[in-house]
Length: 365
Length: 64
Figure (cartoon, each protein chain N blue to C red):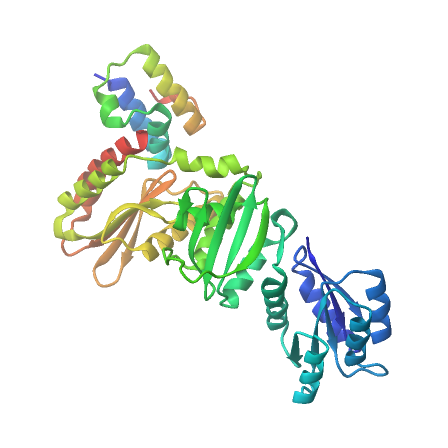
């Protein structure tokens, strides 16, 4: 259920700007505004607010008068003061009245939104339904503000957590899944309930992929499959992609053997999530980048009415390096090659076909 | 042995790239190396052609 927030200030344009900005968090906050203390009191009689944020200096009655009134009326919510004239005396008075904080003006909208979000997380346990809010906005805000906290998601009988540290996802758990796979599943959910929780101190750091890459990959998958995915489908595709890891490693070994010193690094990884299934001198950032390049190329080709990428594409890099990416359905195979030590013909006509055969045995299950 | 199945693999790879080839391996459960060693029975050929038609979105017989 969205938290109800009342903003009080006599500066109409400023207040409407705040309300409009907070409206982007629909489903998290429901924001109401009042341009005077009397109007705020009337609204508090009619509505139950979780939080009142009021300016102190206003014509007629002040924000302090409002707080005194609310305390007398045994107002159940909390209140925060905002002022351009913050003094120790004012802060002490607000504290005496049970006010939680004082916000010094001027401030920007993002900072203010985060302040309110922090308040609800720490004091009231912010929660809501995923299908009623823009969950990506919430996650992006956590990222932008470099927050350290946990997002808990409950769906049917499953519970998941996404653990943020300084705005980056460091771990996740969802059912029996942990780490990157759990985060990828959770980011694709479009139903369930979320709540924000304080960060646990002992969460292991197991995800290195940048937050934006994770989020963009999840959004792309949703864009490409606009039909809402059920939980079973989201959990189920894990089983479909289960492969014989021993055979995958064998495929990498076949490539290494054929390429010798010419092969500098290689990874077989998920096309959508960049997660490596097998590799040598693995580089998670390179996997994420190649996944991104492949998806965007295919999107651009499709948009222009061209056929999609074929069996592979090659990036000729400076410093005698070359990247070959083989597209294999849900998987990509990236190779970093030293062009001084490896022949392209050998790579494309002998090494890759042999390695592909081995990979195919693994995928055929 | 498996000449028809191998040919289906070749056509699917030519027309749809490795994406299509991996899809065929997943759908049939038989990789190309194994297919080339199998007997070309009508039942298996039919299974491969049906999967290939679905993957390529066209009738593979026109390329056989």
